[in-house]
Every structure is written in structure tokens, then in C-alpha cells.
Image 1 (cartoon, rainbow, N blue to C red):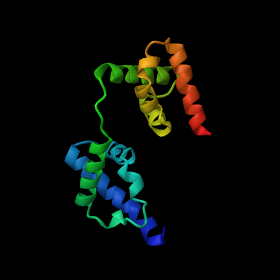
Image 2 (image 1 turned 90 degrees about the horizontal axis):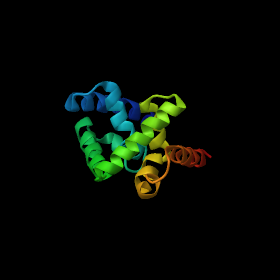
Image 3 (image 1 turned 135 degrees about the horizontal axis):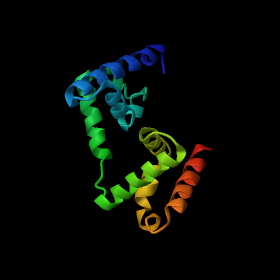
Length: 141
């Protein structure tokens, strides 16, 4: 990636965060989270696609498109179990719920818990937490 692109993307992200904050009526910090967890974020650095040439509004539309593609319907009981696991994990590790959420997202533990709900929800919480920790540790390597 060239120097120009390397310098323009952070500026684009700042403008996009301001736009997201305004449109969604959320804080700038929440807008940054919205950007960083969106699959489109990684695409910004695709030198061939040159996404950074888009206007802030057009870039926002792309982020919304990819956000919609990212969504999937998760049954209520599965979501409640996932949230419960994440919160108990945070308590046991003495970290914030937000930090636990970031860890789960970063290492794919969120998908792991959701995809393995049928097995995991029949186990004791100590087993589930150990299993999640083993999963995260394997992904860290």
C-alpha cells in the first residue's frame, strides 16, 4: 500500500465515524466499534478496490450493505445462551463485558458458541468456559 493510501484511510475512517455517529445517533466510540467489527473494514485496505475513493456517504452505504450480509437470525434461546456464556466468561476473567465481546469476536468464539449451542448448552458452565478458553487459546497461536 502506498503512502497516500496509508494516510487517507485513517482520515476516511474518522469522517465515516462522524457520519455513523450522526446518522445512527450514537457516540463516536460506538461508531468506531460499528466500523471495526464490520466486514467492510478489512476491505478498505484492498489496494485494488480503492474503496477510499468513495464519498463518506457512499462508504457508509457499503458498510450498511456488508453489515446486512453479516446478520443472521439466531434463535432467542441460542442468543441468550451466548450472552450468558460471554458475561460469565467476563466475570470469571475479571474483564468487562465489552472486552469479553471483543475477545469472542476477535477469535471467533461467538460463532463457536452459537454453532455448537446444541452440545454446549447441555454441559456444565465450567466445562463450557474451559472449552471456550481452549478455543480462544488455539486461535491465539
